[in-house]
Structures are given as C-alpha cells and as structure tokens.
Length: 376
Image 1 (tube, rainbow, N blue to C red):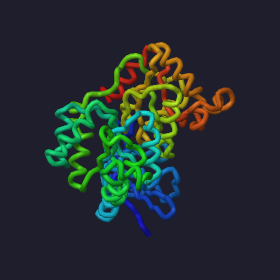
Image 2 (cartoon, one colour):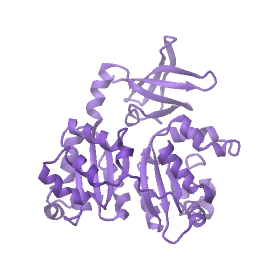
Image 3 (cartoon, rainbow, N blue to C red):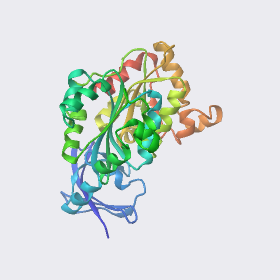
C-alpha cells in the first residue's frame, strides 16, 4: 500500500513549545496517522480524514488536523521525496493579458487543466528587471524583442505544480506564433488569451533548472525589492479570498464576479499566512466573534489570495462600504435570504468559510492592504 511520510511541526501556545511529529498519508483511502518523534510513540492512530488531499501536502504549507495547525517542514523518508518531487514538478508561467477582465478566466483555465497554483502575483516590470528576467531564458536578440511587451502592461506570474509540469505547460501554451495559435490551436493558452502579437506575451520555463532560477527571481527573497507593487494604498479596500475557495478551485469565479461588479483589482498576490500573522491580522475581532480561533485556523489552512480593490467613482469611505455590501453578509445563511446573489451567499457555507474577508471600517482599507503586502 502506498504511504507518504512528512515531518511536521505544531506550535503549542500553552506550553510555548514546538512539537515535532511524522505525518503519514495513505492515498488509497485518504487516511492519516501521526507519530510523536520525541515520545517515540503513535500520537494518532490511522483514521480517515477527507479534509486533506495529497495536493495539500506541500513543503512549507500549513494544514489543519483536528483543529491543530501543522507546518509541513520536509519529506519524512526517501521514498516520499523521490515520488513527490517528480509528481510536484514546478514551472513558472508569465502572462501579459490584454485586459485585466480576463484574469478570472486565466485562473479557471489553469485550474481546469490540472495545475496547482503554488505562488502568484501581479508584476510591474522595470527596464532592468525585464532585461534580467528575460536573459535567463532568451538570447540577447529575443530579450530585446520581448522586453517592450513586459513594460507597461498587465503582467501576472504563477508558479505552477503538476507531474511533468515543464513539458505539459510547454504543450499547453501552443505555438509561439500568435496567428498560428489563434487559427490552428484556439484552445491553447496563447490561442485563447492572446490576440495581439505585438503586445501579448506568454512564457513558461524551458527546463527544470531554469524553472527554479525563474521562480526564485520572481518570488524569492529579493523579489519585493526587484518589483514595485501595483497597489495604490489609497481609496481602496482589501479582499482576502480564503483557503477553502482555492481548495475548491473557485477563485476564478470570484475574481470574475468582482470584475463584473465594476471593481478594479489594482494588485493581487497569493500568500500562505503563518499563525502569528493571521492572529495579528484578525486581532480586532478577538472577543467579538466566538469563532475567532476557527477564523485563524481557516486562514492558515492553505493559501489565500489578497487583492487591493478600488472603483473609479468611489472614495475611501464609499469603496469599503459598497464593496462590503457587494460581497454580502458575514453569515452566508442570512445572505442567502436577503442577498442570494452576493459572493458570500453563493460561495460561502458558514461564518468561517464565507468565501472572503473584506475590510469592515472605511479607515482600515489602506491599513489592511499595507499589513498584507508590506508587513507580513
């Protein structure tokens, strides 16, 4: 029987200790077992746990097991590492969309083709950063040819994971000739999303070593210094799409709904919040909502997507108030009765899993965006 093993950590707040475990996952029946490393004994006997899937077990991710957040630190044995490294091969995808209104469709396209989105951000290239990025994969002539397409456009970068990701993504993109892609391969990524060959740009990693270089360039420790944020930090509100939406593959639908509502997404990035950051972010709600701990656990249970939202005709007070009305009541069951088409009413199912967090107070809009993008 196939069994995967992971080294995980749990921070015990009461004892102020980090407790180490080995987590075993059995894909045949989606069951788990835990072993206490220090005590050298079984901590949790094998039990079915449908809330965890193999795709959730990524190094650096936090998963929730019976209300306990576990940080996945490393593979627990050579077999697991050998099997999963090939299954979870990574590649970078960079797309300049001709219109930001297509962003939701792009998310849906990626997810529908079986890719897991590990990292994602909106990118504003400078002449220097465009030159440096393109030189990782292209000749000097091609770098100069493509550089103008990265400057001044709406560019999105994704780290994608899938078995044989580099090769499959290369096939999915279709021919580099945009005319040929549109005519002969209309379902390819280039054929579907790019119509203007002078401004459109799609790139994916050419091999595994280059993929790791490109991913580090786009998302590594120096990336925030390399790229200027596209957030404005004024006349804005925060929308934080919760992990349960990403796990369900519904993020594209929510982004499309926001755009169709007339709102603009100035900036967007995928984050994995740590317990301390999620607790600090939600601190204002402590004592006000009885499910505070559950809200923290939801935010650390997987990736969230943070967006700075604005509207061309709204000031700071209006954007927070109107967007909060747009997404619907905090409790989806109430929303279904009075605002059945609101985002929380459609995609949420309880007050913790209510699709997204949005800023509640007008004066907090820029502050929440700053916390997510610049502090955490």
